[in-house]
Length: 120
Length: 258
Image 1 (cartoon, rainbow over the protein chains, first blue to last red):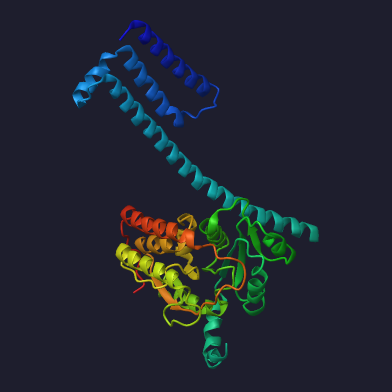
Image 2: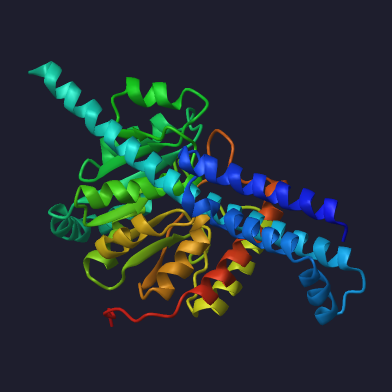
C-alpha cells in the first residue's frame, strides 16, 4: 500500500476517534452507546497502521483480493452497529411505555387531588 | 336476559361473598366515542358493586371529551400505546390500588357485564388464576366471521403446542385475573395483539387458566381494530411471538390450584 494512502487513512481514523471523544467529553454521546464505535475506530486504526493484517486475515479465510476483506469487515461492522441500535430502540420503547403509563396514572391522581382541593 | 331469572336466588348468596373483594373493570378505549357512554352507563347503573377504569389510549375522536364531561373514572395516555400498553396501564392501576380481581372488557360493548360474576367466581374460589370468557363453548351469540374463526383456531393449535393449554377463544379480550396474575401482567404484557401471547406467557409462568362460557354481541358502533389486510400480519406476528415466547421461557410451576 502506498504511504500517502496509508497516512490519509490513519488521519481519517484519528479524526473519527477525535470526533467521538469530543462528543463524549461534551456529553452529547453516551459512553454506553459509543463503545461499539470506539472499538471499531481502534480496530480501523490498527488496520491502517498495519495493513499487512488485512492480507493475513484475507488469506486465512480464503479471500483473494484484500479489498474484499475490507468490504466484508465493513459490512459486518455495519450490521453489528445497526443491530445494537435496534436493541437500544427496543429497550427505549419499553421504557417509554412504562413512562407513558405512569404519567397517565399520575395525571389521574393530580386531577383528583385538584378536584378535592376545589371542593374544600 | 329472560332465561337467567330463575338462577337469581342462588346468585344473591354468591354475590355477598364477592362484595368484600375489590374488583376493577378495565375498559381500554381507542376511538370509542360511539360506544363508550352506553358501555360505561350500563356498568354504573347495573353493576355498581364493581369499580371501573377507562383507559383512553390517546383517541383521535372525542372519546376524551365525552368521558371527561360525564365525569367517568378514567386515565388518558399521552401517547398511543395500543391495546397491550393500554390494558397494562389498567393492570398497573389495579396493583397500585390493591384490587383483588382485575377484569378487562372491550370498550365497544361486545362483552356483556352480566358474565363478569361468572368470570370472577372461579378466581375467588381459588380454582384458577386467570379466567377467559369464551364464546365458543356454548356457541351462542355472535360467532364472528369464518376467517376470524379460522385464525382463532390456528392460534389455538399453536398455543396448545407451546404450553399444552387448550383455550378455545384465543383472542377474547374478556378476561379476569387474580392479584398475582394482575401483578405479573403489570410487568409483562405484549404490546400489540397481546391476548394470545398473554395466555402463553401466563401459562408458562405457572398461572392456571380457565375458560368460562359467555355470549358475545357484535360491536354496535365504531370499527374493530383488525381489518382484512392486518389479519395476515396478525397471524404471522402472533404465531411467531408465541413460539419465541415458548423458546424464551422455562416452564415454571407455581403453587398449583388443584
